[in-house]
Image (spheres, rainbow, N blue to C red):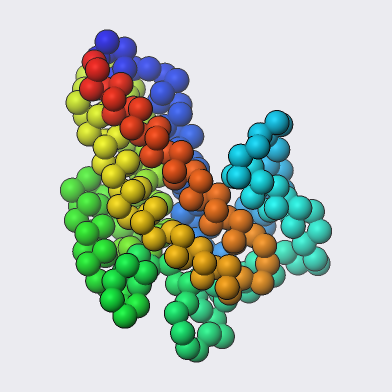
Length: 230
């Protein structure tokens, strides 16, 4: 059973799907959308018959991108700067997406949450690109960590000597990280995104990310249990 879990191609493919989803979410919060990314979002097919809130927010994005104006890349870049870089905002709490700012005292950066995620990154062999020049508890970097962990899980599942205990530990790390360092503050950040965004895309995207992460917590619970039973 342990060997069966380690080489299960379907599970590995699912992990690679998670990797790609988290990579997209990470890029969307770390950088302005490119023309190619906007084209890809336009082509997201509706989930026929789905009643989920995630699908509803994807529908909002598609509706916006169906008639976005003459230059959607520039319009979204302006909204990105206003929301996530606080362009033109000179007072009050902003939507700059750093966990410390939303979970620590006095809206300060580089606090306990940052130290905690740095420790988790290092424990799991993840190095953050220093050229980004930003605190490591940026939500985009936390989502990138999840992408890298999903990829590591896929590789472990495909390894000929993959251990069920290792898969279980990887699943637990990802589940706990989602709970302790994403879901614990994403609602507060989303409220600020709602406040400052002028276009519907980023508010919808925040809710898609939350819904995806919530589902992923349940998936990692299932994977950890399956590995424990081997």
